[in-house]
Length: 134
Image (cartoon, rainbow, N blue to C red):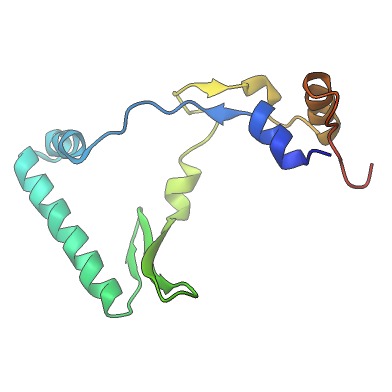
């Protein structure tokens, strides 16, 4: 039997992602807004990355207001990495009502479990969706 997560992945709303905006484009955009050259903004960005690497490498989380917090962590195999958690203000700025990109399956926002079951079971009659508690 299929699980709800499979149905949501298949039929739920998704953001269509376009090309990744890279540092040069971001630096140019910031430069135009801040009256700085693209090269200066890029240099500051590279230095910011170095500062984050240095301080997290010393065991210090790095919080950038409006952007988020970078926190060092280690997994059970001893691999050290940096986790990132977006600032709540940044997350709150992304709303379905103001998002100008494409939302696929937008009409399925807030679709309930029974709705996903109906969609899944119609497409997968030999592997029906199991919904706990129903």
